[in-house]
Amino acid sequence: MLLGAWLVGQYEPDSWAAELVKRRYRAAFFPVGSEAADELVDAYVKAAASSGIVIAETGAWSNPLSSDRATRRAALEHCKAELALADRVGAKCCVNISGSRGAKWDGPDAANLTDETFDRIVETTREIIDAVKPRRTFYTLEPMPWMYPDSTGSYMRLIRAIDRKAFAVHFDPVNMISSIDAYFHNDKLIRDFLTTLFPYVKSCHAKDIALADTLTVHLGEVRPGEGNLSYRTYLSELSKLPADTPLMFEHLKTNEEFDLAAAYVRGVASELQIPL
Image (cartoon, rainbow, N blue to C red; front, side):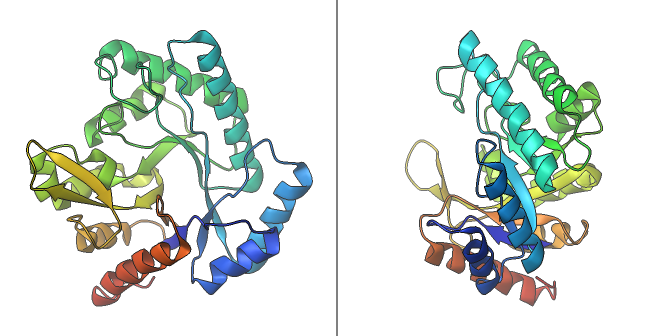
């Protein structure tokens, strides 16, 4: 697997690649979006290639299930543009969430986990993929606790229903932990997911999760190593995937925090004798 992270700060293409190499990362989020000038996109691609950096993901973060027609259409166009960008730059995948039926684009809603919404996700994903017809990349949906895909089973159902070779899997186990059972037995969740969906996995996220001893139930995202996610299981299972599968740190505020996360994960990998 290839470790990667989002660099905090402003970097020109060459300094961006140099900073990734300095911090011993071998994968990266593509740092600009589809609105960037062609020359800048090409410069980042060249810098990554010359430094041996694999482009893991482009982000299509938006709500293509929005109940507002204009918001929905804009989101669909954004997803298509970012998928086209991913194909152009050779990213492993383009990532989005499926979307929410509620007011907040990534928030919970009673209608999210319904058959009607499942069918809308299928229709929406097909439209995005069929419009772009990617040849070098895949469109993926990051799991979420309150929208599809929220489990191994619902992800497999989507793969079968969408029925497009360009639809694949993004794995973020922390986003799937929404119960006490899943929290304390996340090793089983990880094994089940990767055993079932391993042929489709294109990129993964590295976070952690902690349970507070405050009523009622409070589960919060924390830096890798500060929570209960079984990184021994996670890395062991990821090591069975293709060697160029990215494992990407996210949501930290400084490069130094990313370094601490990377040090922890590299330490676990070293104990397991997994090259990283």
